[in-house]
Amino acid sequence: MKGMSNSYPQESEKLNTELQKIVRVLEFEKRSPKKRTLSVAQMRVLSFFNEQDVIHISEVSRALGLTIQNTTNIVRRIEEAGFVKRSPNPENKRFSDITLTAKGKRIFAMFKDMQLVKIAVLLSRLEPREIKTLLSSAAKTAELLEKASRRDGKDR
Image (spheres, helix red, strand yellow):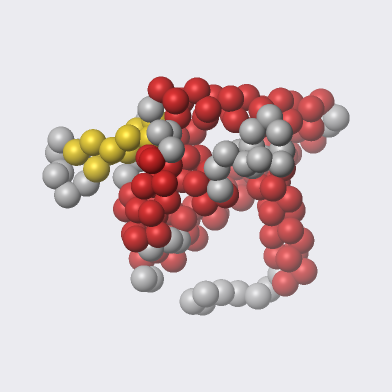
């Protein structure tokens, strides 16, 4: 990675490990954990629907650090599964608007509800000040990672 400072190697390793644990626990899964509905890559793409109703391949590609082709393939697979649909962008014909289908909304809501239950259990074990610290740290971490991701995308 260009210009990466290694001032905090131990802390970086610990944070990476903890973030990976969080991602593993919050994966999209069916009621039976043995049979996944979505891959981690597909889940990462769908996670954009937490923040907006319409996504575009270029913005997802940039944010996730994936090539346009890889992102297109992931979207095509979740489209074939019936979770999303593409339609021409009315303002720019070079773009496709990607939205959740009714099936996608149902399964996304189910997965999100499952995650919220897990998180609520976690939060119930913390003191109010610990919750406040956790939320603040998570928000700052997300902000820094998003900025770094956008910066890295410009280097391509």
